[in-house]
Every structure is written in C-alpha cells, then in structure tokens.
Length: 285
Length: 326
Image (tube, rainbow over all chains, first blue to last red):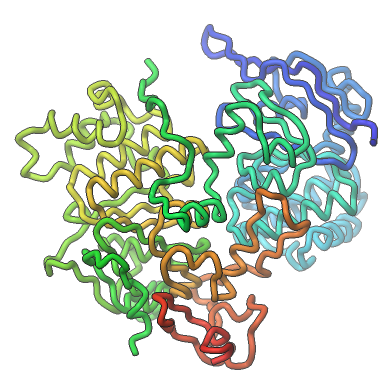
C-alpha cells in the first residue's frame, strides 16, 4: 500500500449565519493513498462541497488538520500554498460555468500556465496546451474554439486539461458527470479512469450516483449532515450498506435491472424504497 | 403499412386520450428556412398508463411534449401531422393537459404564496369552493398540513415540496393528460424516490395518462408502461417497457451499455462514440449511422422507417429486419 497523499483529521467547517453558527462538516477524518479514488457520497446539504473546499484551503472557519504529501496545509507559506494549489485541483459539475466564455480554450489553458510560471513564451504555452488537449482526448485544433462552441463532454475535457496542465496529482471532482448525457458520461468516466491508471492521479470523487461511485471509487465514505455514517471498500459499502441512511440511498436509486426484474415478477408497485413513514412538509419558520 | 401503428398498441385495451400522428416540428431561423427538429412522431397516450419518451439532450423529447400543448417556443412550429383528443375537442394547457417541469423553483412565482398560485389554475367549476379544493389538492400530493403550505412562499419550501406544489397546481385544472418533463432530475435521490412514488400513485388514483420525459433509464424502468426512444428528432424504438431487457436498436443498446453498473461489472464502459448531432447538422440516411457499430452503405443513404414487429414493438433500423439486415 502506498503512503497516503491526503490525510484529513477531524475536519470541521463552520459558517456564520447572522448570529448563529452552523456546522456544515462535523469532524470528518479520512485518508487517500496515492493513485486511489475515494468516493464521497451524500445528498444536498450533507456537507460534501464544504468538505472539498476545506481540503483545498478555500474555506474560512475550518478546524482540524489537512495534510498533503506529509505537509500540513494550514502551515504553508504563500509560495507553499501556490505549489499546493498546483498539485491539488478541482473539477466542477457545470463544465460551462467553470470556463470563461470570452477566452478561447487555448487562451484559458495558457493563462493558467502563465500564472504558475510554467511556460516562458507564447510558443511554449501553445505547445503544452496542444499536448494536454491530446491527453484528454481532444484534437489540438480545439484550442481555437470558444467554450460555447463545445459540447458538454468536450468542455469537461477542457476543464480536466486545465487542471492537469499545471501538474495536478490530486483532483477533487464534484459531480463531474452529472450534467452530461449518458453516452458522454461513459466517455468521461473512462477518461477519469485512464488518467488514474496512466498518470497515477489521485481522486476525491464527490457525487450521489451510486453506480458511478461503484464504477470509479476504491473506497467510499457516506456523508450525512456533515458526518461520516459509513465507510469502507466501494464494493462492500455499495453492495451491503449497513447504516440505515446508506441503505436508504441504495434503495432509492432507480435501477434498470432491478426494476425490470420486479415487474417481470408481476409487481405493479414502485420498487423504490418503502413508503415514507411521514411526509415532511413543515415549512421552515 | 403505417410505420408505427403498433407503437402505441395497448395491452389492456385502455382508451387513448390523446394521439399524435406523424408529428413534425420545424425551427425557422428565417421565415423561409426550415430546420427539422422533430419528425414522424407517433404517440398514443392512454388513461391510466405511463408512456415514457427517452433520449439524450437534443433528441426532441421536450419539443415533442411542448408541441402537444401548443407551447412551442418562438421560431418553432408544428407544421406536420396531427394531435387529436379522443373527444374531438381542441384543447391545450389548462384544458385537459397539464405540465410539470424539471425545476419547480423556476416555475413557481417567488412573490405569490403557493396557495394563490394553485388557486389561479382552478377551473370555473371549482371557483365556488376554493378553500376545500385547495386543501384537497395539497392533501392529494402528500402534504399533511395543507393550510400551512398554502400560506408559504416558494422559497420556504424544499425542492421536493416545491415539486409537490407544482403537481398540485397541475392537478388543479383536472387534466386527463399529465406531461412530466424530467420531473425529478433536479432532486436528490431519496426525494426523487418519493416524488416518483407519488406520480405513480396519482396516476392510478386519477386515472391520468402520463407522458414521462426523461433521460434516466432507471426512472423509465421503474415507472413507465410503454417506451419510445428518440434519437435526433425521430423515434427509433418503441414498445412495452420490458424492451429494455433486449433492445434491438443499436442506439438503445449503446445507452444501456453506457450505464455504470451497481454490481461493478466491467472495467471500461462501452459508451457510444461521438455525440448527438445538433440541429441542422443531422446526417443523411439513418441519423445514428456515424455513431453506429453496425453501419453499412444503406444506412448512410436511406433513412429507415419505424417498422412494427408482431410483438407490439417497433424499431427503425436497417440491421433489425426479419433475420438481420433488411
């Protein structure tokens, strides 16, 4: 087993809402070994995005410890933090929203290279840009296109190229395929896996689609209201979850095979989880 | 033979409430230039049944649904085929047909209470008993404190509750056909499951004909009785929902293979190369041929019609004739 690339210990994220304090992440610990994929499963409000931002030191009000490659991220100086941000990057759900509409793909990548001082001339930047576009499965000619001229899958490839071109080894992907069509989603998932295998990228994959998690993740943690309620190898947790909430998630996910089998057996009722005990309909005061 | 006379064939003899034949929609960027959006769509919506329209974005599902209620956006027109109600009357939204959309937060008006918005969609015959009807509707969609919900503003409700409110609003007009366009796509899975259960329940109780539009094959398998798969503006395969066990069209086969599996089988997903072609750049011949593993010369030259098999299923594919290639 490799040494962990990322170690998170008792992480807490607190927001201030007016005079109240709201704890979004309540003491979460985990570690990810180099070249592995940790899946973070949870619904809206579970704290998964706060967790991601806290890991990348993008969040105030964080307590606990985040160690990356053995170094405490909170103790990094300016230069150290810049280097950390180069090695640890984020890929978002909405591939269009995370690209500047006024920059051509080539210019967007060149800008990142310039900020991190990785290309000393225009020509060098163009050359590197072309190489990274090829790495993510795009023709280098796409450097001359604007984001709106690309499909959703192509945009997500550009986002990956932008993260990789500065030398990222650790990527946090927040629902990277949930805005994509099924056929394109498969292409991007394959690319994520290839990057893990050929370039040794370490992933923190955030999402709610359990089949995607099962396909991508080595280990998973299930997050509910800021706390880890279940953790373990993806194959175990997603096949036989033991926490009631994890079981509920699994039962609620529509599944082609399961539904067809149930209907073939003559059932007219919907297989998706047991009837809710009581519908929650209390509008917050 | 008409291309799709079997597509809406109904097992239990349910009556068709609304039928569409040869439905075609054009987009007119200029008055004399027509781009085809949807062509040759055949639908039979029956009371008490859920018909699913499935496909990726840009395949024409939502446009088809909008055409049924005369809700096409500016620049588009239904200029082919026919939409007919069983009773022969001309109808539209609020008169027999109701819609529920993906994003309830966008559909509800933020400055009016939920109750006042539902009240607006009540038909004249219910205007005399507004309070009772409002309470009845909110109870029907699963709220336990209808009075309190009626007084709430949309932002005070969660996404799932907003979608329930939208359903109540849709039911207020006493529709016979409910079009649910990606009704749960924006919701968390546990909330989605509750809304899907509610939809199934409402359909049974109110004997609604439901047209379910979604890209999620899992949702289709759970909820639908019949299924039409669209690709680039046309229906490519139709039949009862268990056609998903062994689809015939290569596109439908590809969609299923592209789904990651919960049992973790398969290192690499097969997927489908390329992407759905945009309007105006749809290929000649079979629209799927550039992405199809089976494509031959005929597929590039001539467009296959949706042909009915004897088993209530229909498919538009040259490779799917009797005993292989047509």
